[in-house]
Image (cartoon, rainbow, N blue to C red):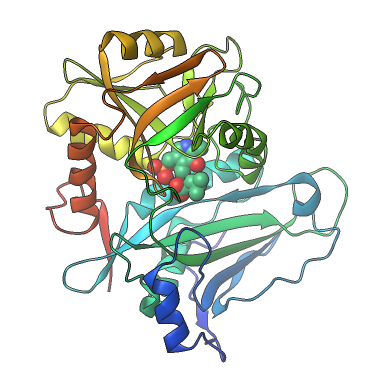
Length: 364
Ligand code: PLP
Ligand code: COI
C-alpha cells in the first residue's frame, strides 16, 4: 500500500449556510444536531487502496440499496474534539490515539486500515475549511466524527471490497440535555453490551445499535445513561452506553474497570488516569461489582463516581437505580475530586494549562 499521505482536493460548498443562520446555530448547538458546510471523503477499493481524497460540500450520500453496510453493519467510527485556544488557533486532543483506535476497530471488523497520517490530515484540512463553525456557546467545541463503512454492492456475507471513509464536523455544547450537575444511571439487568470475543473493544455502530433498547429502558426509569454489567456473571461493572466509569474512594484513590476486551479503551479514561497519577492519586484498574458499589455507596467508602468520554468529558454521577432500588453517590451532586480532575483535563484541552504529555495537536 502507498505510504505517502494522500493530498486532499478542495471543492468548496457553493451554497454554504448563511452567516446569520450559522450564528444562530452556533449560539445553542446542543449535541450532534448542527453540522458544518463540508466533509472529508476518501475511497477505498481492493487492489487500488485508498484514493480520491477530497474536502467537499456536506451533502446526502447516494448509496445502492444493496450496499453491504445497510445489511451487515460493517461500520466503525471515532469521536474527538477540536478546541479553540486562547490565541484563536485550533487544537485537537490526542488525535493520534483516535487514529490508532480507528485502525484497531478496522482490524476487528475486517476492514482495511487507513494510514494514520491520512486520518490526521483529513481532520486538519476539514477543520481549516470550516473554522468559522466553532460554537459560541460557553464550553463549546467542534466534535469530529470520522467513520468508515462497507460500500460494496453485494449481499454475500464477507468483508466488503469497497469502503468510504468520511469525516463530518458538529459544533457542540454539552452532551446531556438535562444540564443537571450530575447524571443518573440505570443498571441494565436484561441486556449486555459485549461478550468476550465480541466487539466490545471496537468502536463499531453495531455496539450502539444493540445498546439502544437498554438506553430506552434507562430513560423509561428517568435515568440518563445505562450501566452495563459483564456478560458471563452479570456482576461486574463494565461501562456506560457511551462512556467509561470511575469511582472515587474515601481514601482519595480512584478505580475504573480494567480493559478486559469487552469495554471501549477510552482516550479520556487513559488521560484521566495519567493526570490523577501525576497528582499523586492511587489509581486502580480493577473489577468492581455492582453489589460492592451499592454497599460502598451506602457505607460511605465510595464517595463519588463519574462518567468520562469525549462527548461527556467528565460528568458526575448522582443517582444509581435498578429494580432493587436506588442509591446516591455522596450528596448526589458533583464531588470535589471529580471536579478537580475534570478541570485539569479541560485546562489542558483548551490550552490554559501546560501540555506536558504532548496531547494537544495544533492545527495551523
Ligand atoms: N465507552 C464508550 C462505549 C464510548 O462510546 C465512549 C466514547 O467514545 C467511551 C467509552 C469514551 O471514549 P473516549 O474517551 O475515547 O471518547
Ligand atoms: C464520544 O464520546 O465520542 C462518543 O462516541 C459517545 C457517543 C455516545 C456520542
